[in-house]
Image 1 (cartoon, one colour):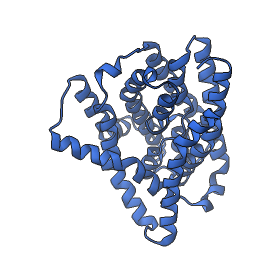
Image 2 (tube, rainbow, N blue to C red):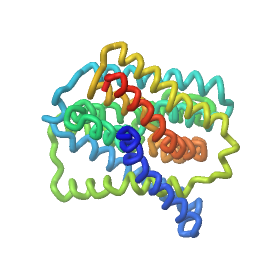
Image 3 (cartoon, rainbow, N blue to C red):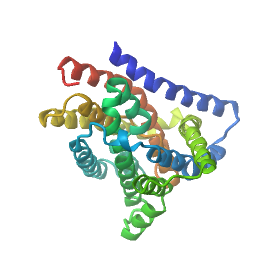
Image 4 (cartoon, one colour):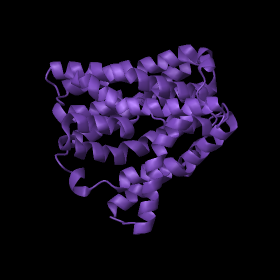
Length: 315
């Protein structure tokens, strides 16, 4: 029951935020146009502040506490393999370019900060804090770079190296990641007033993003992409977690280290995947469905993985 409680406590608040957004849309306080404009503000202002804050506030003593470098290497290689496998699946399965990039995002782009970190803390507390904190500084930029590449590859139907490169270095989330890493490495401290402002913007980002996602969600559009939706969810929530966690167990990962990898590979699709898809000409309806249903279904899959790993004494 503890495994189920962890899953529910992490995900239920996010569902309620999306439900609030959906109700707001029904009342007419937000329409499709205003939700799109609000999403644009989230993408360019609020989410970058959240990304910067997550990296900037990492404490050096926690960062290297009980750190196992294998976690970092395994996570980076694993996410890279996820990207390549997702590329093959999306290219072979889906013919619509606007959906291909979104499917790729949905398969590898996990909600590590909002979902993974609370799971790590709930399972192992400080023992998982160091590795999880370091992964925030490394995995987040990698997610954003690969997400931009995925969307740019199929944007307009003709991939362009310079367009992809430009998309990477002009993406607000990637720029915020770079700024956060530079501040972390060189121990740059922001003036108090600026630090508080960034912190306030960051605290609004996630709740607002989920509310706007709920406002933009439409059940009527599910039928248009149900096959792609089911395939992407199956890969994201079942195939990838089973494959990479089983491999991790065989490689000797146990305890807090395995819990961190569970958070990396079993997290649902990040809410910023919807925001990015909408701003980069992807299928925003499919992206929203992937965030919503992966979050819903991950309550069950997370419970299953935690329960099995604990029964087998791996965590």
